[in-house]
Length: 179
Image 1 (cartoon, rainbow, N blue to C red):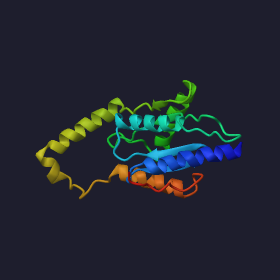
Image 2: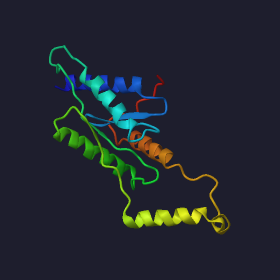
Image 3: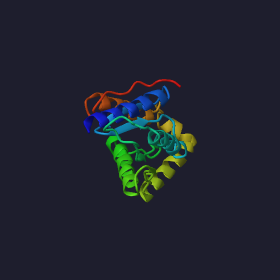
């Protein structure tokens, strides 16, 4: 029922609020989905953190009447790579969502890592050429360098917070709390 579902959502939201780091972002993304943006996590650590959350959620119990005895979580993890970024925040979330549905189809109550993005042959060749040009002594004379390159991780985090706070989620961002 709705009361049982609301109780589960509050418990999961409370867990996220208590366990995320001060520089992470978490929020309810709609229905029974949550988004957690882990700053500085790569393909090695992000699935481990997701697995820790999955284990904790699976230990929740609701012995009250009309509540499920156990709750499970299927989690999709997508990692943002600034060297090979998704074309948009929507694309990154879509990769995580695809991994989430793979977790559900593989039997639920598990973590699945999204397929990493790959460069095409042309993109790889262009990157190699650009790197070689940047190492050339003429590069610094021929092309002025920006003072500070745009930090795509900061841009992604800002876009996620904006999307969550503009009503594209069922509730506002959960405030981060340091552990």
